[in-house]
Length: 193
Image 1 (cartoon, rainbow, N blue to C red):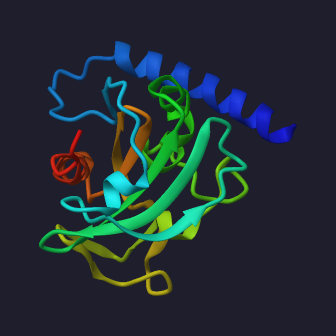
Image 2: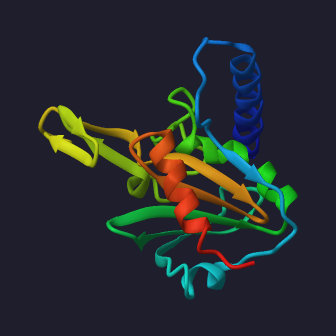
């Protein structure tokens, strides 16, 4: 029962934040926003991702007990020039995937929305796989120095952006919104259907 209240509260909070932030104008045009939706009635499953040409390597399957709408969630990677981590959440339909967006933003939302502490997050499965440790300085490719115990911290999400397409949500690794969306696009361009 507690989780239902958390989900409702989180959804309302996200709607409020999203509504307020969409009314603000900063004078700068942002090339990429958090989250992209591609409407589709196609129903995908894990085999669509693990087979050729996508070749997603599943490392873990998470329990979906804390995710009201999800059927299954997988964590893994796809090797391009370098390996890129992804989390794929499958739902019964596109509408169910859209309903699952609020809890995706705990991992791939704005700085204010991301919740990687198990006491704050509604979906706590695989939190350690989501955390990305940044040292004292950070290069374009990742950590340039330091670590979790050497002036760094592990409260950042490796997922900066996501795509809702058909009946799934794809969370994509990246150092910023643009890099993350590029990694989403790279994987989705291989998806047949």
